[in-house]
Length: 538
Image (cartoon, rainbow, N blue to C red):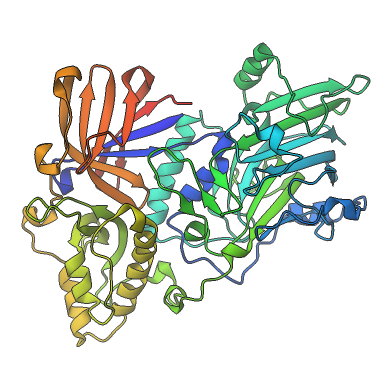
């Protein structure tokens, strides 16, 4: 399911914005990465205390033979069993990975589409778009007392700014409403890992239960077939009413086409360029697991997933995620301390690609969130020239938007945030400090806060054939290409489709059939009014 958010932002002008993302079990890592996209400075030393790890580590585990190495998958990737870290396991192994915890025993394969080919596993990927594929088969040692979840986790807690936490909380709330409230999310703390979880029974791509005296589907083959009627009934099962039994062999799998671990990137995102995972979570690894959660009736936070009993948890790391040598990215000031000395709290929230008609170029600008003296939040639009003026001692900032520079601009936004907050700690006599205050306290003229809007298609360089489109409504606006990138585009609503054109384009960057639209709701993010349009997609 794809969510399209059309934003009408009164404080930023009479504009329209659109936001595209894909939340689903097959892209759970994508959703988790999106949620933490604002988290660029993480706690590098503090490890989470986790009861479930201790529980799993205390279990007995069978030894794993050296055959599981298969000479290693390569590409800088490492696969580790969190419950049995001394075991030698790898992606695309010929033999399955043993699983043995206090809750579950069985075997698993963690399969990746190998860039340089894999004679053994390539036939299984043939005709499929998936890039990551996890297959598990085994039995429960005891009947789970709580709900069993599949999760994407990070190995240590994170710190968010006030603005990022507000924004991310809105994102998670919207995803929860999209998935019927079954999603569980946590930023993480001293007792709980950062995670995003969905109930396994309802969310897995395939679940097949086989009596112990019958033959289950063969693990490691692509011929698993779940009866369509049984699958539909499983998906409709109310969360908490499902039953996992000890006299059944459970075969389940989940996969995604949106993560390429070999390049450590998010890929195949509709309307979004490939995104490096290092830009989302720094040098942290990813964890993929399945656990049982039983609510603690005496817990302070009844919704927290503190007590977890794992079926398994696999830690995935890459040499591409090693800490960057750039000293500019090793921030020494925590993000939650980002404030000017005169009590202005701020954050560079998004970078914006607009279109300048006279020069026919796409200049960069920024949306800043500031906390006003009366305690109310406000979004302001700041030009790249104003930012460059404050950071005059740091030349070389990108000021124009090009598709092949998007990743660099994402990184630059993080660096700009860091440098501006360094400026905010300098003495009041500093010229850079004065320019920063002037930039974040612009004139009260309403025109100073407006994004360029109301431009006709020709002024944006958009060429389209109206005579065969049956146009119902059109106008210029802004699309959220990612959670930190806003792009000026021209929107056209026809009797058949919603079309979104980038500036100087003759073909739409996004095309959505009106028949796919399933719901429309309203949201309020900071001081921005949001209209969310939901559409089905494959």
